[in-house]
Image 1 (cartoon, rainbow, N blue to C red):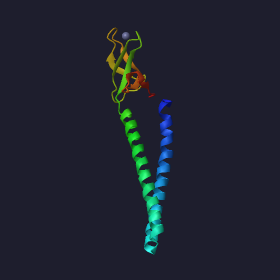
Image 2: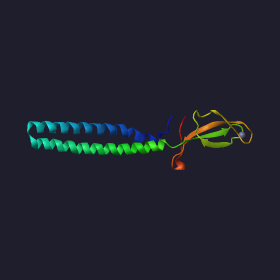
Image 3: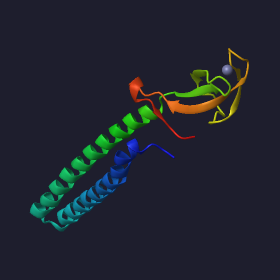
Image 4: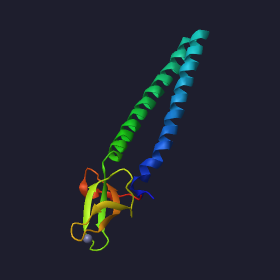
Length: 140
Ligand SMILES: [Zn+2]
């Protein structure tokens, strides 16, 4: 189960991509029509189609670029390191350390509680976001 916080941007993305793809297709069709009009000798409608094609192409490229930038920002956020919270079942002592490969919630770790030498259990795995207060827990 993922947190719902990121879902709105994820939902708009495919729609935007579809719009950009349609725009790109229209641009290509316009350019193609322009070229065929040019071949047929009708230069005025050729330049009309060509200019529509070029503007659409420019717009969709710009939109693609914007989407890409947002995707990169999203990816950067995903690249933030994971942390694991270790908890002692006996006394409740908590310790946070870097996420290690194979960590999962409720896993018994090799680390022991400094107070009573009990093996510590992973109680949470979370991602540290730049803004530390926003560190959200993710389900694993
Ligand atoms: Zn303990």
